[in-house]
Image (tube, rainbow, N blue to C red; front, top):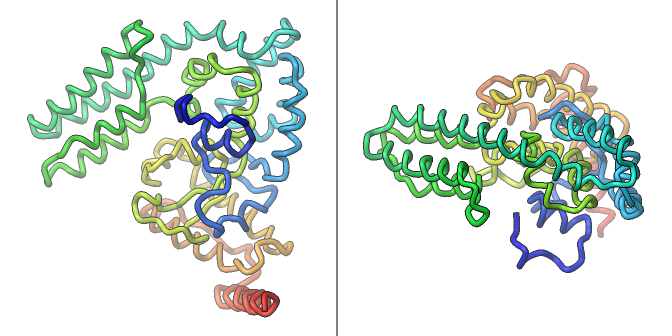
Length: 348
């Protein structure tokens, strides 16, 4: 998250995504825009329906009218079917809180929960660090000691009650890049870095959410619940690993599903969410339905491209069926070519 120095003076929906949630709303390329326009699409990571882009402005206007907890819960109730597990669990808490304290606000609700959630969060963090230490036994003594030094420092920070020094997940992940493992232990060390990505975040842990957002105003808390299910363009092969900015390397996912994966290999992400292969099929079926209804013009080859990409990136764990698709690969390519030709002619 950006520090207060970089915080924008005027908080709009787009710069909220950038500065507070670390998800770029428009992405880095126009290639993802055709996917953003689609509606009724299942998130390929979480299996919920993605909130479409055109719902955002209306939500923001209603949010500005929310004065108390009851107002916030009424607004969020319109999106329960889109919520991911963490956000849905929190919504249930907010709903009970608003019944007893309708004129209060959701920040006070989180502040009441904070101490208990902070202790549980520390235990969650320790569990991941314990697993990292366990895996370090497979490293050389020199590399293992360097890693243990970093996990030990993390434990000291986590268990400390000092408000000046708090555990930062990103700081620890970045510090792992300072360790240079031997050539023959790079694969083991990459497995350790992937395991470290399981450190809890506000997307994966209710406790992390409460601790983080108990310091935020109600408007930011509600916005964050909503944003988690909005559409975000995701690289199948992460850009940091050479993934291209082309539609064949893109998925439309929920923002939380995108952020929670980070740069994790898809094979590792499937271990965390074993239903991803099923959700991917639901996603492609929705995409196919959109194309049959006239959407995604010029990108009729997208299902074929994504099918091949997912199979490679998942080491064969994701095998998409296109049996419902009306077009063969050749027919899809011809449709895309014809659209491009008409579009180029129109531009002239």
